[in-house]
Length: 123
Image (cartoon, rainbow, N blue to C red):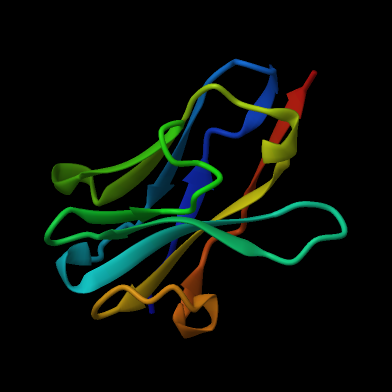
């Protein structure tokens, strides 16, 4: 069982920045693919970014390329998502997720999920 705890959401104006954190206590994430997903009201959950934790290989959705950055802190079993140049359409609940093995864009293959952290961007 992998426990994931997110933090760092909040409310910002368009153009602002936030950093989301996802901690996995007592879990070696080297053999996991980690991902950030988001769900806006009335919309389906979508992939934002993934990170092959042990290798540092990342993937981004086209909608966030150049604005969001996924990173990791080995020492603290933590994954981050830096959100910059935020737009109102980035408003959503953001979820951290993990799956053992290689990365897969299909979110249904992610077995472990955090509780979510809300990001609200006003114009």
